[in-house]
Image (cartoon, rainbow, N blue to C red; front, side):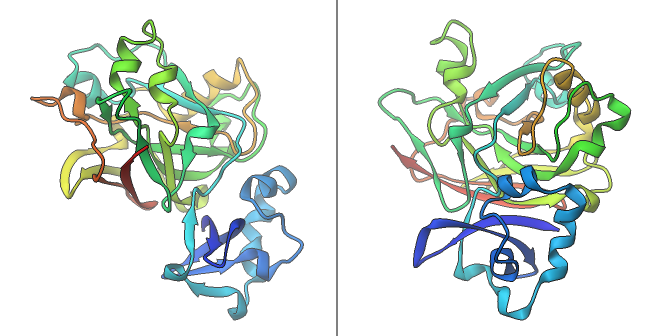
Length: 290
């Protein structure tokens, strides 16, 4: 199943939960009027197996074309947005770096999360070195504490696509070497278009992953390039903190980012970033001036 959050054009402030059925979206809030209005609330209140069964309540009256709604970020309001740095072999190679022996963890604020109907907005008076980074995202489905790698997949609700948008000057030099400000500017974590549930992804570590800017391919790789695999990352994180339903983990980006191209390339207002991961979908994001 592919879960989404969306709004109707005549009521843009009311988030609704649905799932994709080809070119249609099923309005689950219409099919089940007692259902919470956000996916995060559903995850907090229902077991994952119950959520998978929601689609059995679908009626034709709850089905409408995807083109008639505004897709939003498929999950928002999460407690944590966690990210793994230098986690693709080809990304390490383009920087001439040895892959880290343990996962390099940093975070973004949850307020940076936006969706397909939104835009990445650049503060052009603050930075002119904003980069793209397509990433596979893990969505946690139930509380996870002290989870062993062999059991880690039991705690995953599904997967989505993200752009870990990064102001490289703030990431590298303008904040004492700390990543936070360069990673957490407003709108710097677009995700979507959907969350594909874990039962539909045979092996999340064998998926094609690509990013194009204005139709020009910039990143093309496979998640088999991951240095630290998803179960190991979950074991490490859950050994020091409890991962909560709705928390997301950005698992790293492959080679081909703008900073390490020759010459370096950066995003500018008017650009269109297209990010695709096999079996999940394509996230289209416009870039605008703040």
